[in-house]
Image (cartoon, rainbow, N blue to C red; front, side):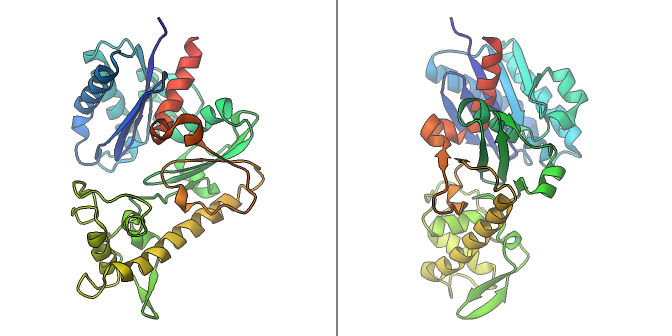
Length: 335
């Protein structure tokens, strides 16, 4: 019987799962609010995932960014917490092997992960690029835009072609841009918004996020049951307009959905421009591989050769791409 590896990408806002045989699932998980519930959430998700598919995993391959959550004093504390909680869930489920992916391109046991937290912390970008280089495009620029960040990763000769391995180094060289298609605060993108011919300074408050601009312009779907917005109210276009209005000291009484779309266009344009500037620093790579659900924020030059990860993996698996990457990378080592 073929061995099954379940890849898990443990983020600060989401848990993503994908198996080496191509199944995938994702759910929201606010690490910064309930880190103590991680083990139980993993346990429930793994049980549901494999009950639904009639099988069980032989091992877990894990990557993470959730250690960055500010509920942890530092990354070491965060890595240790995630490692222990993951191993606890695996033990309860009688999964015999758990390995953690590092920016050295290797999988490590829990003890090594805890002893070398900077090797394990925020390594999911490396796992995805490693997988893409091996299985999708041997020479390319991977551009992955998620809900929180954008990763811009050169790949050469099937290998991750950067010496910048930490978040700090990647921020410095432009390969990590802290802009995503959902959670980025509007005040982190623009200092002014033009409204009725007047350039108005925005309030430095988290009244609205990129998600509101995406909603208003139809780049993402409304969901009245989802209240993970800046004000905790439903993710509807009408309420998104109200949230954007607050950024310039107004509200729904003076700004309607049509007016708010004018603000949304400016916000999207600012994000696209900042991402494009970072991409230009890595322009020597001919083919682009686009990943993540924020691809609308990529400004693609005419004639730019481009591959879409979803075309190769399918939308469901592509949504959980780093989890699938560690599953495939670990699976290849067991064959």
